[in-house]
Image (cartoon, rainbow, N blue to C red; front, side, top):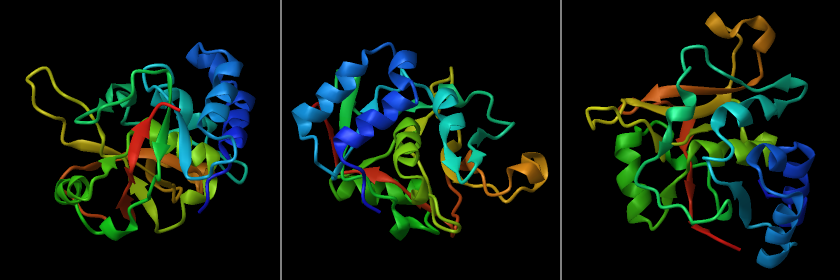
Length: 209
């Protein structure tokens, strides 16, 4: 599923007023797109997670008329930060060649991480996955969604929390409620569990402009 041009992506983020939330001028987004190549469709324009956390991005997702949401038992969603991922020192950056990772369906995050890094790629962050869905809502397909295992929580003990974030489509069951059926959903999975309907998303690299 092709990305919009970088210039279109910048306008989309401005339309969502994310530049205001992140505290960057609208011109910074459009200028970043121009510097990188306004007509490019091989990269995703991203905002530093510290400036646009998951709790701010998730409700902006849409599938039809249904807004996105965070599962009720993930009140600590903004604590999921980059783990083993080096981000450019810039409020705005590019994610090169994002991939949904369908080949990792029915593979646990623990198993997939080694294969992703061995292939010269990097696991996608939760905020990066959310920004991708904002630009390309159809990247979430029934039975083909994805985890974002580059974001983890490190406990005070130094150990990593055993959850990993994921984005998928609600079935409208349980605490989601029937009114949220078919809505885009931010939830979590166990690090060592496999899911036949969740790939593990990755990036080809991250650059500034």
